[in-house]
Length: 442
Image 1 (spheres, rainbow, N blue to C red):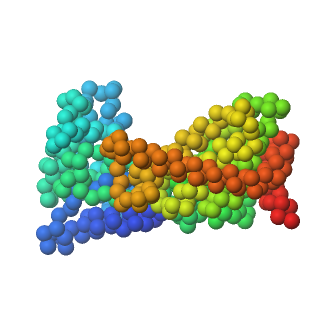
Image 2 (cartoon, rainbow, N blue to C red):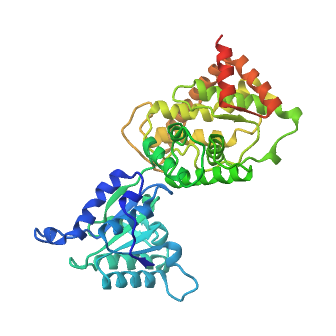
Image 3 (cartoon, helix red, strand yellow):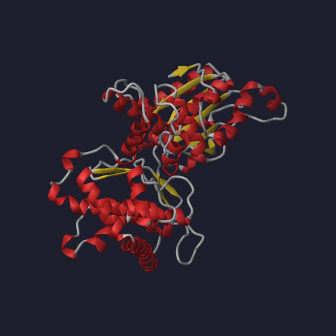
């Protein structure tokens, strides 16, 4: 697929550092003579690495738009077209040949990890799964090595799985530069929310900064979806404008999934659920590095990937511990408020997420007891070291659960008051929650 894109950097909100790193490519296309005068040549390829939805594809288009060159794009699904008789390698060769004919040009390979598979590494030997699986990889390596200095063809590729790429692709003369594309920060999220709100009729005076704070770890695509979901719900309710409550409910739906009213237990069994929901809200509010409580609801939700993505962004130890405390609040609630025979399996998912956090602290982030400046995979360690690491993981989780338990014991009356309101009304908004906090402090 080729076009002369009109998208510019001004059409891409955020990704300031990535834009800066890609500026040299644009400068080269705009004035190649000053680069050639000192023997500089266009690098062959750059990998755009970042989570889904941050705008990698749009950024690639913007590079071509700023440079004013032809833009060729293809994804794994497009290259592996079962309707044609051509292989992935054939399609790659065709794109590269077309780009060279119509140079200057930029080729964009989206989801490159699905186009070329990483080969198995055993010692110094690369053992292919099968010749057919490695054919696209070999074709791309040959094509990248076949560039001449004057070809004026540049390859951008995008992935959210950099670890899955074969090392041969990342060598000098191929994709030897990796540009990180992060999720937007709070200021960039506010800018994105304002941009998408311009496209829909909305209530005046919306707290855009507050919405930006509530959408921590959202990508640009998530924010677009949030505004669209809010406008759909507003239209369904026969409203003329999108209100703050529509946006807040859209945020909650993206974080925790849609409501599942069919999963609600009978009213006589709501008390344990209400106590757990109230406990999580109390821990969210009182734990250091917690989260704002926008709504408490007894209506179950299907979980979504946006919430609490442990792989996203830079976080300090206190923030990670706060995140873990919130995940373990339900488990601690059962220990405080329920007898052993009344304990349930409702905490399975949150226990799993908390365990992953603790495992990352020990194995990946150097936050173990020895504060060892080393990151390694769990399968790289021997039995003795693994046993020691397991003890540390258990200690971290127990310490977090104990912190939650102390908080819940301290605010036991507040938890019970909130749970009674939830049983009666099924949900509680931020304003009511804050009023109950004020009454509890008197």
